[in-house]
Length: 113
Length: 118
Image (tube, rainbow over all chains, first blue to last red; front, top):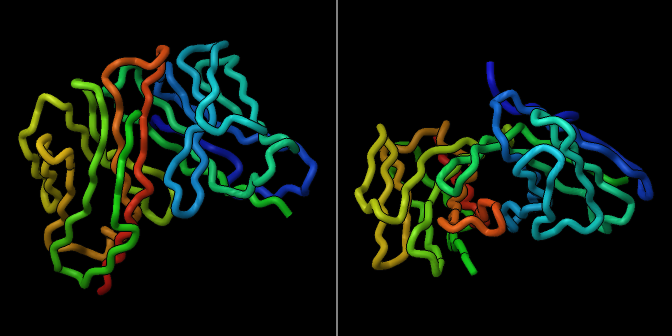
């Protein structure tokens, strides 16, 4: 059955460590997105990708990196340069075009100790 | 620049009451799309409805209804006879019709947390 998977659901990291969040989709969507959700701030776009081997920075890309080597996969790396990485991270995918809704994964809650 | 305002950060209602979640948007585009998403406690956002800027017809789906008014730039969401399962965070979102550098620019509101008390 189709959908988006994210792993792990909970992740703990020590300060100074890089960590990679996984996102996989089997909906055959071209576009994929990473959002960060903080209390009282809604969803903020980190990175997006419209096609394999291409991605663009969103509104808060500093301290994050991504890759898009396969259509199905869009992993997000939270680097040690990200000053306040503790947050809930959501991955989404969708069809091309502004009229398309986005399909979201279950999210990863990252806590930096 | 586009903007979505959800002025109600938290709402509590007693089960079976009706509740309306407000959404006000700003955009310079004449073609745009509005969405509502539901985020239950599990965390995954679920798409509820889409409306394009040329279609002001209101929509009803079961206990849910949406009122789109271009004159007031609002896209409000009403739940009739609320149930405990409606407890969630609800997001309103706006997508511009013109692709911004090839990207579907979506702006989300900060969300309204709805608590339905049994």
